[in-house]
Amino acid sequence: MKYTSLFEDTFARELGMLTSCASTHGDPFLYTSLAGEVGGSNQLLLNFFGIEEITSIASIEFWLHPQGLELSYILSNSGEYRGKASTNSKTYEVMIRTEVIVLGNEFVVAIVLRDTSALERALLAERYFQRFKKKLLTNISHEFRTPMNAIIGFVDLLHSSPLSSWQQEYIDMAGKSASSMMRNIENLLELMQVEGGGIQPNLHPFNPFDVYENFSMQFSEMLDAKEIRWSVLIDPRLPLEIMGDQDKILTILRNLVQNAIKFTPLSGQVLLEILILKQEENKIEVEYAVSDTGVGIESGRMITLLRPFSSAWENQRHGQDGMGVGLSLSHKYIDMMDSHLMLASEVGRGSRFSFRISHEIHNNAHLSTIEAKKIAFYSHEPHSTQSVLLEKYLDLLKLKVISISSLVNPELNFCDVLLIDVPHLSVSQVESIKATYHNLQIVAVLDSKSKEQLGHLRKTAEATIMTPLLPSSLHKVFSMLGKTVSQEKPLDVTVESKPEATIENAKILVAEDNPINLKLLETILRQHNFTVTAVDNGQKAVDIYLQESFDLVLMDIDMPVMDGLTANRLIKEIDKRDKRGFTPVIALTAHALIGDRERIIRAGLDAHLAKPIDKNFLLQTIDRYLELTYEKRKTLSV
Image (cartoon, rainbow, N blue to C red; front, side, top):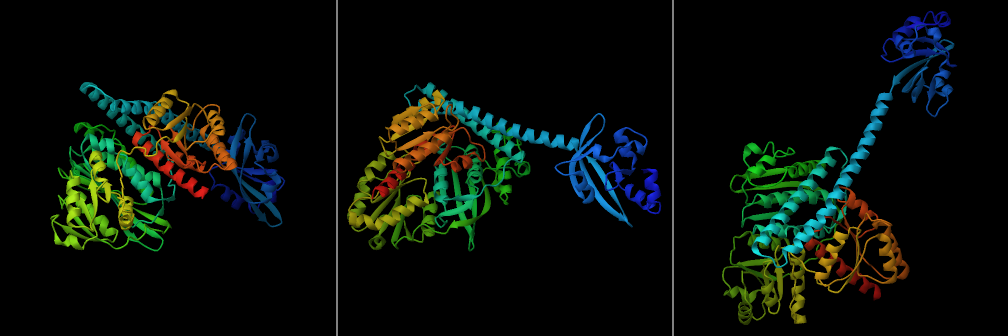
């Protein structure tokens, strides 16, 4: 330490102690009076100014500038402050630490300066990089999804048009390649978000039946291509609203289901299970599991399975596509939700991936209790997965069931309902059963592809249920069966894996600035007998909405002149002002990164569909919201 003569004379007895204290610091250090006159400094401070003598250091008021505070304040109040220190040639960002020391009747201020310029620049660079990365990912996602929506959409339309066998083969290959590329890019973009720390759990209430049943209908094309039997078991005891990160759970399940389909051979089976394991007062623990009858996983590979890109070579070896990031992404999401991914697998027999999530109960209402009925169940394959699932569903619904091995059985005289699962069930068979057992109500379980059979059986059976089996359809059937006798009218409950719009001639307004995607949407909707009005920006959508009413609006988000969020807000204001009732506005957007859906729903849109749009899921969503629209308008008019 170097001191001025005045400082040495004043604090001669304390000089050793002051020097000892100063030597513990590895940053520029000085002692001053309360007025800011420098009395002592270490060599680092002299080096900072490029001088040799302490007497050359000016009073600190000339070179030390606290941020947002007077210099006199930091000299009289011990603490840490931000500020700047200036030399003749340069200014540095510094952290200033002051300590007021009382020595008899005198006050000495110890000051430590730490240069934070490099840290500040690094933090600024990091913030800039994070903003740049977020914008880059958003732009990549948007610019990739928009053309892929048109490619996949028009390939799908071509697929259903008259083609020669070799043209059909080419279209199949193009569609599969486009879908594979889309899945790979989606997973890669989300993995980049997760690795960058830009994603956190986003909990909100949701209806598990709506969400999971809709999800189960999204894989029809992949399943049909390999003739895979798709089974679903969703616990009917689930509350009507639970808290959870819906988007991340669906992403995990989607990756697990797609992998299961990918590695399951022709005519194999894939099963999705969502079951309550434990329930407390305000919480439930739910197990999510995906099982398959695929190739299985060797024990040596299980260690590296969750590493990004580790499965890419294995995929190629099995003649499959994929970069091996789906499982890694799923694992990271599961870890983010305080759970872990469990795997049981046997080579040649198949695999089962599962994880458990604890959900808070947001609405403890449940599916209504079904009036007690005695049900007989007949299946041509009593030990098949579908038969086992049916019996499990009925048990969870607390219905009394007996299994019968023959349709000629005296037990049927004492039953209310016969649930029958027989392929190619004919009208004459149903009529014969009803002629023998007069009071027996028939519920036929049909494959989702049996549309012609469905048309015939609707006239004779009291109810029909299409696979995959879902809790809401089963609950609806058995809740309504008691009413069908008095109504003398068959009950039709059909859940199809390829839904078609049932509300024809509804008026739909479509706002989409990309002309190719606009043409695609017009074509799909008109093929299903909707009346379509198409515009290419939000302002035109609002202008035409002022002139006439619509039953539903499909809205792109990024459009010129006026964006979709603003257009939606104005449309909702028009509905309120003119008392038009409820008109759903559904976002069709390339904004599909984690967090985009929540942002768009918070902005007031009723639903969010990410591009590329699955035609069947689009039609199902439109159908569901049109039914909701008519129900709300009917209630309002009453």
